[in-house]
Amino acid sequence: MSESGRPPVDVAVIGAGLTGLAIAREAARAGARVVVFEAEGLPRRPFEAGWVTAQCDADEHDATSSLRLAGRSLFFDWVAAVESESGHRVPRREGGTLVPALTLPELEVVHDRASWQRHRRLGFETLTGGSTRDRQPGLADELVAALHLREDRAVDADALHAALLVSAAAAGVELHLASPVFRLVTQGRAVSGVQVNEGQILAGVTVIAAGVSSGGFGLPPVPIVPKRELVAVLGLGRAFTHGLWHDRFRVSPLPDGRVFITGPLEAVGFDRRVPAGRLAKLLNETFHLAPSLGDLPLLTAGCVLRATTPDGRPMLGSTDAQSLIYATGFADHGLPLAPIAAKLLVEYMQTGNPSLDWSAFDPRRFSQ
Image (cartoon, rainbow, N blue to C red; front, side, top):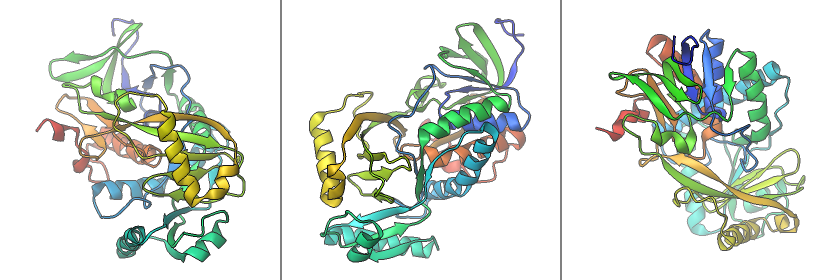
């Protein structure tokens, strides 16, 4: 019995974002008694563009690209299960994503990316500029070519998060919102639970899935690097049915007509401000490729802080501190990685052997 007077749980999860809830739901469905602690109230994702991608920025075969492909292959069946369990519908964009080239150097990048994906036998289509404009009206005449990636799509992330909260609770997960974890409870080299307002909560396994806040809980702390992603939300652009993925901007239209424009990740620490000049540059570069979007009203603008690591690879697995597991550092691929992270972590908890080699994501690589 813990000092809070409650019996121990099997799994304590820090963070009620998509990854934390996915892990909690999976563990509860496997029979574990699971509790989730979230520092904020009811988390929302108003600036989450909902990308579910594995090919858009893939240029080489490595462990991270393999993990993203595995995650995407699970994702939409997983969403369907969450919808069934929660009774909530999760809207999704089915039109695929275009990777455009406006210049000859960009065309070379597109060709190289196509060559790699052909070698991996991934599904894609190479389009001329004219064919791309036929596929997605409203694009600029300067467009030279594009890749059409049918399997790289998007969902309404806010709707998915709401459905996952209900699904996790239906599976038996105990959710504590607005309940921050102050520290980990340890016994020797083992983590035995968490310290919250009501006292110590003992747990067989503690999972840190707290996004940019994940770095402060570890023993020792792990190097999570927060990066800012600027977001502008336009509406309502129902004529835009395909995503656009460019190195300097991305466009993600959702079924309700909102169009999310996001920028590249910026290393500015925890700064959540939206610089007017940078937002204007992001919009101008986007409108150069998609001038029709410039006629849409700006609904809102903000940012998302993404958890990254110094080497750009996710942090997934156990640490030297026994009974402590990380699931963080997913950068801007958090959505498609949530179900595969949940699957691998629960396999590890059950058997010690996840079905996919995750050694490249070992949190201990930063302390060696």
